[in-house]
Image 1 (cartoon, helix red, strand yellow):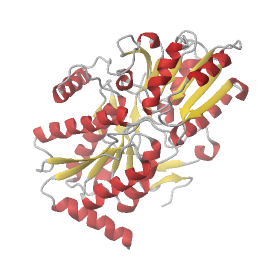
Image 2 (cartoon, helix red, strand yellow):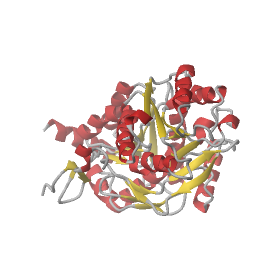
Image 3 (cartoon, rainbow, N blue to C red):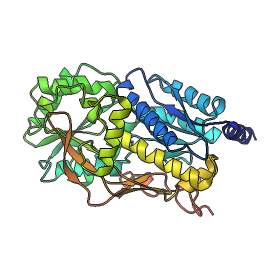
Image 4 (tube, rainbow, N blue to C red):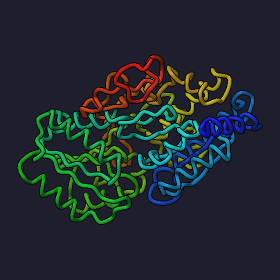
Length: 414
């Protein structure tokens, strides 16, 4: 009963407002500010653009920006504040999985709606979250396939470096299983974790060099997050690690993170994403032009999570228009099958497991901090909520439509 009253109260606040409030839940301070501040700005741009078109359902959109300050428990407090106090109709936010895990119980208790725009470890499907970043089968698995293949240097040893929290550890659990299936033994896999904000990389990078000096082609898969990437890449350069010797493929380093680095020594290292700023399409050119006009800085870059917010926001607008209301239950049903043109070409589709179908791109770092695309899937890839490479997950289905209506079922429930 308490849950129902809370949800109804929140809905009543939203419907009574003169504007439609949109929550923006990104760290503007702390270790994740380097990545998340741009996503806040991107959301403000999208909201401003929608208001210039007349708003939504005859009302203006009103952004409500909060700063959880890279403090995971504070994410939950701010999420509750957005839904219960501010009455937001929807929230766009979070970067790290630990922040998403912190807010998940709040969104489910209060029946809120969250759009999460960053690649993550999968192994989750909530009825209250739409995952517009990549699942592991849309980033990590294709990246490893590239490294093991001829184009990527046919690596025989893999180093898994990550920040010590749920995303890197779960992603690497999936990757270790996948690598084993590909014939890479545990002896040829090195795994290391460091805290958020880690700055002293001298010893770890030396260990990577030592591991790679033992006669087999070695590559590094990086799930390092936040500002720890800056000293990590500096140390790679300090110790003379070049891409042709030990390529590093990153899952959380894009144009924004490279903007603060001397990228000369990093040329040829890799990143796997669903979007790069260098993609030459009319949609991307228009997006970049609007971004520069909004931010009033021609040097500001765009990146993959910005495109994920772009796709998620446009799908939410379309779903609200289709439903004729911002009511979460009605909008959720209208979300399934929504399509938006990717900025990279092709079309993103929202599937009933709350994950998108998107293309997968591998890019090499260029001297100017942009990426040259060296590999791309022929078509979009459907995001998997549950990995086929973890036995207990492979048997699970996520489908929020009848007869399943669940995020982790083995059989239809109805």
